[in-house]
Image 1: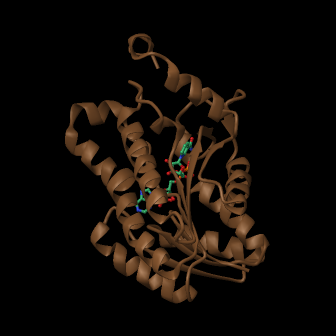
Image 2: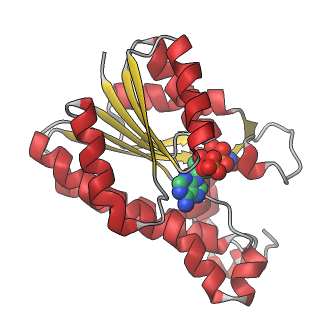
Length: 246
Ligand SMILES: NC(=O)c1ccc[n+]([C@@H]2O[C@H](COP(=O)([O-])OP(=O)(O)OC[C@H]3O[C@@H](n4cnc5c(N)ncnc54)[C@H](OP(=O)(O)O)[C@@H]3O)[C@@H](O)[C@H]2O)c1
């Protein structure tokens, strides 16, 4: 039985992962912005075997509130073994190009909000000398594309921050896990055409997250076929890549 803090707990990927924690009897602390949705998730997890489930409502773009959020969660759990950061939005790229204030709002949730949480969590977990910080970024952060480079910049920024944090915390007893899913069928992608071999379910991503935590991995692509795909995409020369309509 472990203690697990899930930030962005109403996300489809987070909920699927939370069910895996619940099945083994873990004690869970769920953070989200919607009380009703959180309560529904909590009920579901309780039925599935969670040792205990507590919920807290926060707007995760409000970085000033993050120290209190984390302190309350850690105190309620009596120490935290695993943190999963899963919140996010898929920005309207065209709107971000037309108005930088839209981009700023998106970056507040996808980039600075996540970095703020990580800053406080890293200090708490380093002081404890143990635990896992698991953070969902995206393959979109591996290379900028015209169709979603605001989102890609946020996810790539988080991935780079995690790389440095992992380097800093090496030897501290804290695992820093960067999770890079490809296309996942969730509410975030509800407006996109679905189907085909590149699409995964939240449950498939959850299984991969649980394995990566258990194995103490640093970076995981989910499903795993995205690792070679993104290796090739990163290798494409810029002179060629800039001509592609991606
Ligand atoms: N779906 C994909 O194809 C895909 C691919 C790669 C990476 N990812 C990443 O995976 C993570 C989970 O996404 P998902 O696909 O599971 O999408 P999702 O079901 O739409 O979940 C997004 C979550 O973020 C929460 N959220 C957004 N803004 C918030 C705010 N200001 N304060 C608090 N919570 C906020 C949402 O809360 P509400 O429930 O209240 O709206 C929701 O729980 C995200 O980081 C996403 O970028 C997704």
